[in-house]
Length: 381
Ligand SMILES: *Cc1c(COP(=O)(O)O)cnc(C)c1O
Image (cartoon, rainbow, N blue to C red; front, side):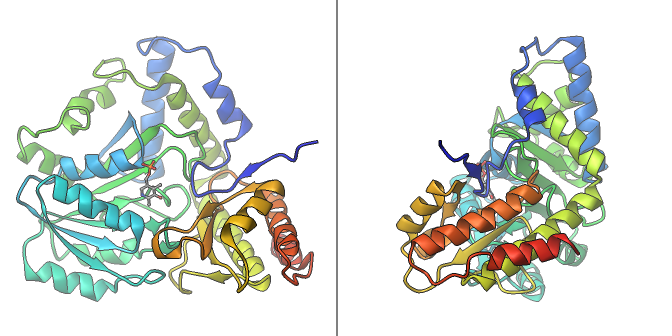
């Protein structure tokens, strides 16, 4: 008999049965009154869950489209933009911004660390920046940026739009658009919301909406806020066909989140990460992100001496767990394990058990049950 495969990469994450069921519903017209109502309620819920008194956009696309939408609606060719990068996804903004004709300055950290807030402040004092980008959790390093602290500091720079990439964070790491002074936050459906890939969700503050207005006509079509705003205000209107079944799936994800409570969900992610990270360290892995800036949504695990990446991930797949490889300089040296969204106790125990079996089969002297025991202890706290 084949072993079931658990999808533990940092997105897509496991999709709960009830969310899958929404994907399987008979598709209706986007103008169907029941759908129009569902879409409208979804938008209201998304605003209140992330505490955003501005606007929210739900558009068919991916996290990368969210990045592009954020930049395109708040900056124009020739503007200065500051990119704070903690890895591969932070760096993705560099190319994106340069292609849009922006003057992009970059401050980066070593992989596994964060750029100190003071350094960002110094940089912002040097010249006028239209916007700054910060990746809340960089999926390549497992580092979590201090978005609240940066938001507090950003009050000194009211002319700069604060853009936060929440793709590997939103609905897992605590976020509050209004209180943290975030101007644009965005994510994709397939990460901590636990929906299949295909939707971009983006929250924009009033200040961001004013910036968009001040830009006048922009050289964009599909990703222009002004094209979508009328639809977000009146979900019965048409600009481009909404992904009907994905919208329903996201609505079910939001129902699950409301039932759990956002604060409880953040707390569960924190506890899950603490259990998984302690267990993984105990069985021989090193966590790339330094203590104090570790994400709760995923772990980036450096192999013990003598483990071959391809072989290990092959064995782990046979044991029923899909994980992702390391990126850039960490390719072959590390694997990435997602533990965000709608994963539960069964998943946590099974994942650590399968990792122990894969290590054992790879010839490491691992004590079977050691990591599982730690997870069990955490679950009983
Ligand atoms: C996954 C990810 C992206 C890219 O999202 P796609 O849906 O693959 O386009 C961007 N930023 C971060 C932090 C991510 O984790």
